[in-house]
Image (cartoon, rainbow, N blue to C red; front, side, top):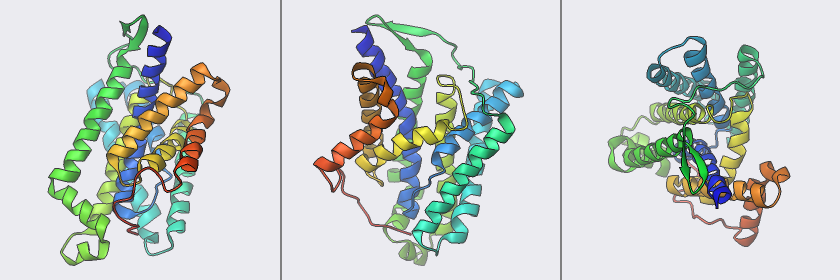
Amino acid sequence: MAQFVSVLFSGVTDGAVAGLVALGIVLLFKTTGVVNFAQGDLLSLGAYFGIWLLVDLRVPTAVGYLLAICLSFGVGVLVERVGYAPLRRRPVLAVIISTFALSLLIESVITLVFGSTPRPIPAPFGNGVWHVFGSAISYQGVLVIAVTAVVVVLVQFVLHRTSLGRQVRAVASDREAAQLVGIRASRLTMLMFGISAAVAGIGGLLIAPITAASPTLGFTLMLGSFAAVVLGGFDRVGGAMAAAVAVGVAQQMLAAYVSPNWTGAYPFIILLVALVIRPEGFVKPSVGVRY
């Protein structure tokens, strides 16, 4: 029983972090209709912002976390200005390749500045644990799940209960029509790139105390997140989050009870089996491509 609880908790924790990456992918797809392949590396960058501020500069914890999220937001805006805005009227594939190139650039900059040796962030509540059915449940893992839940609720509230959310849905439905009624689609797109990067940065700050940050950390997580987005829907926040947690739990269960050698491949095996069973996907898109 203790092993099952431990594996389940690890799966939910991993799924929550992957869900934050998936959430950023969904937000951008809802607004632009393209997938940002730099999303995972923005998570890595957020973790390293935390290392720089909290470990190297010894900034107070709360201030350091807030500054790291703000820096992540700024990098997201920069990604939009460099990798999306100049290519918006080009074929979609050109933008996708551009974001992939930016992901490699971010990874290279991280390696150049911080090195390739994995580095952790001190957990804000220490290394304490709760014991549940004989299994040790870390405070940091609970924090990851709690913060992810809060972020998802806030995003859903913004999308469905605010003027900004109505503008996002309008651009998602028809960009040209939204511009005709006065919505500044370009500014909105820039804002959503920043928000999605900030969400990824939060994921990096949450996972780094558990899994030491490395330049490739975010890209590895993004692969599993991409599988979750395909299963849960590219424009469905709830579906993508649920799929991310389900994939995370399944991945940990298979690693624990089948074979740990295939851990990295399990999300794609799950995706392949799911698409064989239901080729059209489990969630119908609410709108079409809005590029």
